[in-house]
Figure 1 (cartoon, rainbow, N blue to C red):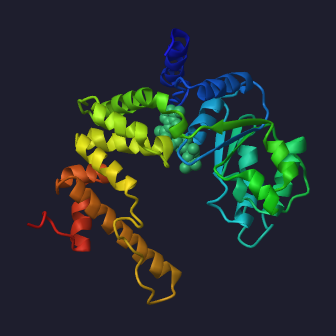
Figure 2: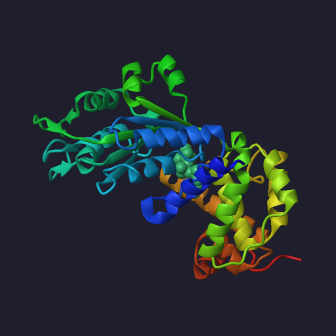
Figure 3: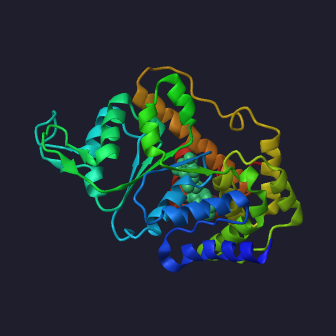
Amino acid sequence: MNVAKAQQVAAGAEAGRNGLGPDVLFGCTDEMLRIRRTVERVAAIRVPVLLEGESGSGKEILANYLHQVSPWNEQPLVKVNCAAIPGSLLESELFGYEKGSFTGAYNSRAGKFEQANGGSMVLDEIADIDSGLQAKLLQVLQDGCFSRLGDLEERRCDVRIMCITNRDIQAEIQRGSFREDLYYRINVVNIQMPPLRRRLEDLPILVDYFLRNYGERFDRKVQPLSSAVMERFRQHHWPGNIRELENYLKRYVILESPDSILSELEERRSGPTSAGGFQLPPVTDFSLKKYSKMASQKAEHYLILEALKQTRWNRKRAAELLGISYRALLYKIKEAGLPQKKRA
Ligand SMILES: Nc1ncnc2c1ncn2[C@@H]1O[C@H](COP(=O)(O)OP(=O)(O)OP(=O)(O)O)[C@@H](O)[C@H]1O
Ligand SMILES: [Mg+2]
């Protein structure tokens, strides 16, 4: 790495630590340095930005960063996950509503656009919004105007809109499920987050950062990764990108076991067809509520058992790994009738 690049790497990490916002490691690949330049150029201009890229590649963390480095970083940053909210609800969530505009609207409420006024708005999973909402969004992007549901008054908002997707929007346009005119409006500046497999030169910086970060957070003295693990990392395909790397390293810090990383990577290479044979429960009743409860319980038991195996039945460590308290784990083990100790 040359000096200029090394300085840029350091500056990228520094920007996160000095209170500007979440850490975003730009690393040293040309693609990431280009993104960093784009961010710098666009930071102070309130134009829409579209962030595309695979899952776990850092789209959301970059959107946060873009807000933090903008001159309106004291103003709100409002996030909406468009896939998580059904169409009609999403409309009232985004634009607000007047009292009596639909059954259950007992009071008037401001929407996310009003809440975000003067700041930034992140529309995550934008490819999931339906056509009616796409038209309304187009209007906001064209002239900054919208109205609450059940209200004739036009309101104005001044917001930077950042749209995020991990779907291929061009393909959605071809399929007729995403408006082309909306695409041009949201895509004034486009940032394509590269997958980790295209940023392998950044592995040492990322590894070092996460080990330090989790070492401090979990109060553990962390040994550097062995060259065998680093070599396996370089060969890995990283379908889950930086999130996947972060999870391996978090487990490494907790378990202090490089072998577990190697065996997990090996398992992934051999490509299990289902999660260790975990299957959905048989259908005995069509109640959606009952079935999802059964399925989620089964998934929970499966994960607990995997965590116990991983930690050789060290329940304290298993609880840390699962992110629950030790007491909660003991309760769950008992409730599920899972073995308390490793069976001989
Ligand atoms: N450049 C980066 N520097 C530091 N950490 C990163 C970076 N990119 C991603 N991460 C880490 O990876 C995690 C996943 O990133 P993020 O949530 O931004 O992914 P995403 O692209 O929005 O994924 P998804 O499409 O699944 O929502 C973050 O919590 C963060 O810890
Ligand atoms: Mg995300």
